[in-house]
Length: 112
Length: 115
Picture 1 (spheres, each protein chain N blue to C red):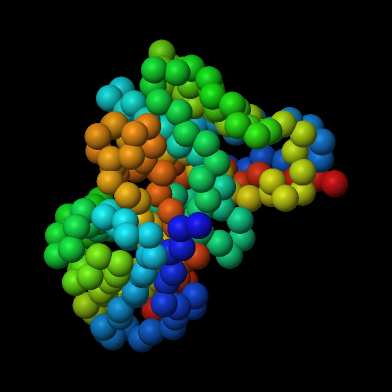
Picture 2: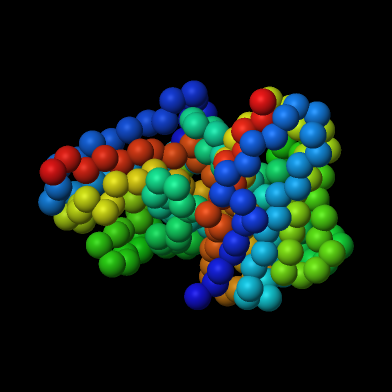
């Protein structure tokens, strides 16, 4: 996941703009990746996942891009809305191993 | 919808107390997980279980134990709570071996404060 630190990376985006949240992973053997959204006071909720045999996957207003060469994952949110304000986590796994290793998270704030 | 519930949203305990955190899922999932969440550190796996009475250590098991006597219930135990165990605790579950996805379903979390 993201580099470990004591402070949560933050991203502020104007409402209506697109958001891009990045995640670097370190395990070359990881072949499954997943993004979660955590709103204040709630548990993480699944957004989208991707396997390493894909470079891109799209959902509703979200796109995940995977660059295995540089071990980088990104989550793109189109036309961000106030309800997108949350902490976003990436997680990785080796397929067949049901444990997930989570990144440190990015706090996304939407500016009205 | 899958529902994962945790027994308490907020808990305050004293140093040295034995603490039980309960998690129940209603979808007959085999796999259950306990994480702790701290600012800037993300979610760290404490213990997980693939089946009743089975448990495996995660990345940070020290100071914790678990119990899984029934498939739907996974308990996290702090044998002697310490202030450094003040944290948000999250439980998750997932069915085994679903093709293409290892999505975990999370409960709402228990915020534990040890004083």
